[in-house]
Amino acid sequence: MPKSLPDIEYSHDGKTNVIDSPISPYKIIYNKDEDYFSNYDNYIAFVKGVEDQVRNHPSYKKYINYLKTKVKLNKCQVFSDITTEDEGVDIEMHHGPVFTLFDVCSIVLEYFIMKKWKITTFSVAKQVLLEHRRNRVQVVMVTSTAHEAIHNGDVFINIHQAWGDLAAFIKKYDGAIGNEYREQINRYIDRSLMYDSTDFSVFDLNPKLFKKKEDNK
Image (tube, rainbow, N blue to C red):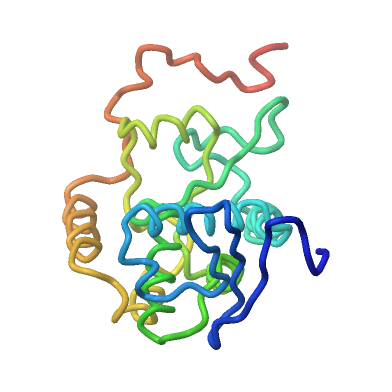
């Protein structure tokens, strides 16, 4: 990056780097502080920025490949007879069932705030990716159709069916997990005691939605 650009000013406020411009209504602060996150729009935009960093990082794709090849999570956990070996089928990673990727990023951000660490989208994303590699982020592997159904609330995944040590994640970030997330955890545990993983018969309308390769011969 050039040291200077027209109408762009680079400075340091004693804590972090700052980018400013006489034609801009606000400054861009590299390391964010608690005051920055007191604004709801700032908070949401930042967490979504962390999500993007995580999803587009090379190690994220490597982790998915690790689950498919090393852990052997290469079949859909909703349609158990569908695997990556089926022609035209891809198995996707879904964050959950309790915490979405947004939830994970938000909790890790709260941990950084609590610890008073330097906060950038890069630093928080790096920690989120580390939690994936340590297998402390719960995920399930599903087809795109099942993935969409889960997001629509048509499929319930029992908490015990997911891959990843949720208890270890909660233990590490306990002080950063707010009451809303705690209630979310408790509700899901209660529901998991009532139901095994189920699609509530939503796919019964089309039992031949997916066919094994040998059925097409």
